[in-house]
Image (cartoon, rainbow, N blue to C red; front, side):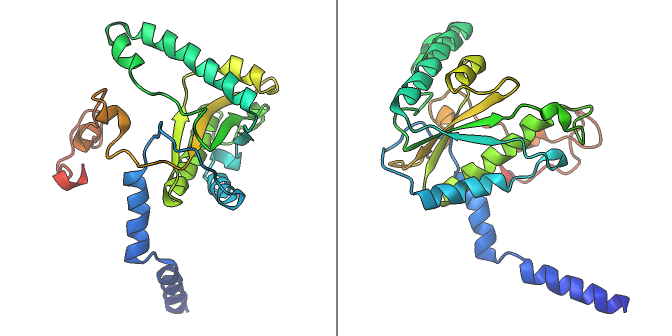
Length: 237
């Protein structure tokens, strides 16, 4: 009886396994996803937008708290207000960077006015009521919402759209602009829409601002700082 149960289990797993092409598509979306700043206008159909939001809503969340709320910003005046907040913080960030101020000011950090769609991802009030998984790590609400954003990002790439995560703004000012309730928090401004082309590599790497670190520098074994006995092959980088 147990053998029959095990056989049925393996048959179920095999039936739900990804094909080689399906698996390759998942990895392609991961590796070709880019934090986009340059958009080509256009539109995103309601059908596609709904698919993207459903993908985001199917993200994992600690204690199944689902701490994400999506605000679709369509009014031009609101977009211009958000653009202004980003530009204000861009100047302050540049000043805080000291000797890299001039280089930073050359970077394009947003597509708020150019993207077909603008979404603000926010954490709702009342999150303290969710204790499961958060009693010692309350920041798991933020981590969970970030998973939703990543789902949306990968789905957007699969749909042939670009997405950029803007986090350069005063969150209190943005919450006030969007009339958000006390206790809520605007985690991300997402620019979404058609693009002329995806960056061949991450934009900040392309602009020589930073470079992706080798994977082997990020891996420890057993204890912090202890390198793995078998380092990852170079092709994994």
